[in-house]
Image (cartoon, rainbow, N blue to C red; front, side, top):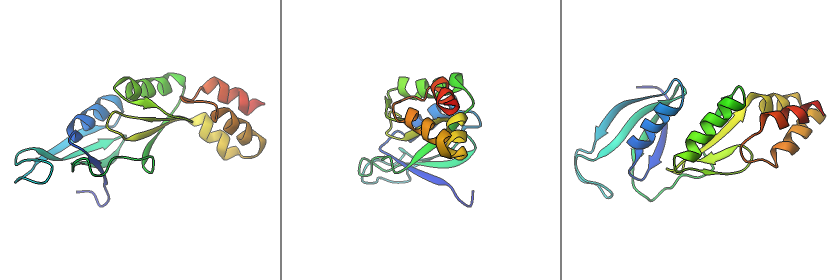
Length: 157
């Protein structure tokens, strides 16, 4: 068991979510699946209760706890991408699998979990600071999925 693991609350689909993440992102996998030893408020004995999985090397646990605590933007995975093709691949996988677009490189998967699909050029522009950061930031504020070419053009001024 890891010293620190992210626990994500799902209504009842933690296993489906974990399998999607494992198919979509590198260094991701589904681990142990534990079933409920008895009935509980939102499930029955034998239902999948906990799913251990890894997303891009980050250990997680999916808990099928019921509908009481939906995901919010207060938690998101931020996936760094190298280019437009990788940005498109992850964005399209999430949105195309029942998710939805949001603003500034954010999207939400069909289980309600939030993702930031962030090209490194945007992160580098922000780290550079000054006018370069301001131009990249202003460009980003007009986007849903990040357009790498437009961020690069904004960086150059």
